[in-house]
Amino acid sequence: DAGVTQSPTHLIKTRGQHVTLRCSPISGHKSVSWYQQVLGQGPQFIFQYYEKEERGRGNFPDRFSARQFPNYSSELNVNALLLGDSALYLCASSYGSKGGLTSYEQYFGPGTRLTVT
Amino acid sequence: GENVEQHPSTLSVQEGDSAVIKCTYSDSASNYFPWYKQELGKRPQLIIDIRSNVGEKKDQRIAVTLNKTAKHFSLHITETQPEDSAVYFCAASMGSGGYQKVTFGTGTKLQVIP
Image 1 (cartoon, rainbow over the protein chains, first blue to last red):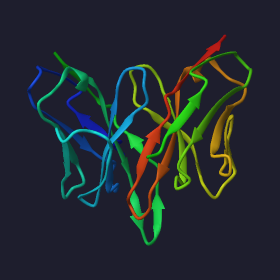
Image 2: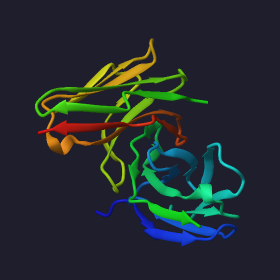
Image 3: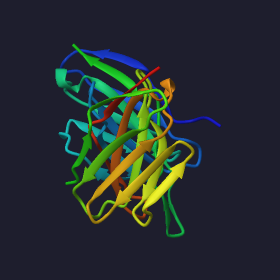
Image 4: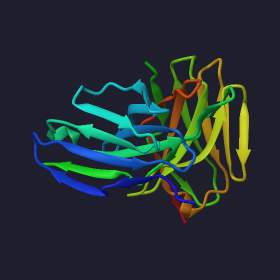
């Protein structure tokens, strides 16, 4: 059974460019969350999507956007890249909620290492 | 918003000793508290978690305690082994009905000395 997958693994971009990162959740999981992890720090919450709707947003500028597709995979888009956007971008999936019961366990993908020069 | 503080930032223990990492959170609405282990260059791995209606949970050498009144929770690792060396993150999560927002602590770098 495959875990959370992310692509690409590494990416180098220039300031001002745009980037799209992709995530496929664990089969059966309906929730995808995106995190930014700067070296030496904990992951910072960017977005959560559940059942294809944005359910939560962290303190990130509007340059960051995301969406979730009918198969529950997700994309994170970052426009007008800045040097400070260099980080490991992590995707985490969880089952979500059914019948009034919520499963909170999140499982992370391997991440995409973004370097902005 | 939620704020999670984690201490210590680094911890060195002798193999076989116990290690304790402590976290505090600010928002009483948080209802789920996971702990992650992250080895260098790898993804965070969920190692244990606790819900707000439980005070303690144990899984082999790892245990987590939660004090809702004081808004703090702790990770206890007994009989530490060199392979326990990693960065450990606590987190506080709030949400329901499919909504979930997770706030992470700043991490504790644990070194187990053989």
